[in-house]
Image 1 (tube, helix red, strand yellow):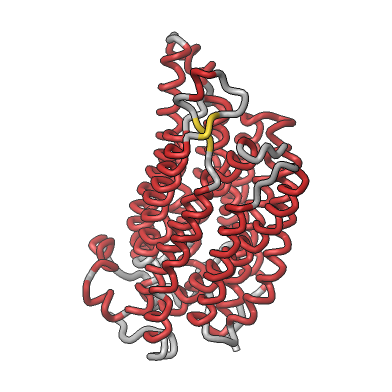
Image 2: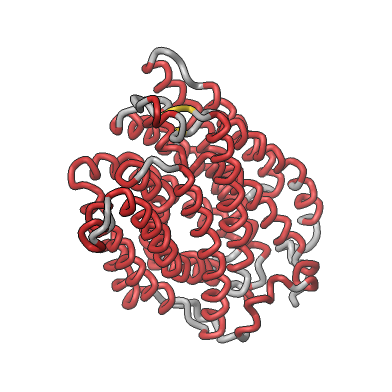
Length: 445
């Protein structure tokens, strides 16, 4: 029986974890960076998330197709990480003070210009990150895995974002207090770049990978015939899209919510988040192996229910006594994260099971539409609309500031739970379709 191999495990863990740390910094700490150092403007945070999602999707469509055409994932992955790290480091130079010095403008104008620079640089960074990670790395994993051990591989992959979130939400918070945002961005950029340089020497493409397709294959995944022939795959994409929207309703605002609404200190939310993530990851190590022996589509019922229940609990977990809030929010977070990882692992494994091997690169862009584009456009839009409607004032803000500046509201978790419940309308369709061929692939086009 073919196995994944020690070298591939190391590549998957190192490149997967470093990539997820970079994405976690973008999805969580860039938002906090803007909120704390430039302007407490959730509209800019929302716009940055949305434009990043659009950029990531377009980039993955093009880069995934090009990696198929070149028959090479290694170069896209390695050189992409090198440049990705350099663009992350550039964030260390962004500040309102530097804008004032460079453009000789007023501080009020500099704030607006700096916000624009952050959004633009975030999109530039996303181009290289998506080329390296979303397109090349994901296609490389698909190339090198088989259905017999894919659930185990996907289980590890699904835990990496949570480990990254633990490192970023906890460790990076204390790191920022020690060396500042500039030091954080310089250090992270260097690590990503060194990782990419190492990949040039250590990453090997699958022996079965061959050059295939043309540039016009960017639109391959949108052909009605392809959708029809791979209905299980596209139903899984739909599940990923709904799940992603539920996540993005609250995720961009989570750390800001814990620091402002709940009043957690950096060490406090680090501990709460860390314990919840570690326990959730341990539970899913077992569940990942179990999914290889059970019907992955049917297990989505359990995973989605746990995820929804966790979000609903997070909505209610706020008490007058801070210790009670810390403990109960941590328990609710554990339930949510357990479901969060399990849904991610199951849907990721189902996508790889149902992806025709010869089209792994071409279909990464379609996957990104459902996993990134739609969630990152509609999720933050819903979340920020709720925040605006609730209009909770900044703690310790003056009377004038209260009328224009606001913080995340607990209702974002309620909205996320409701969105997640929509999964129960799609899962039965996938279960029914998966009763077909072994891989859920009716035909190859």
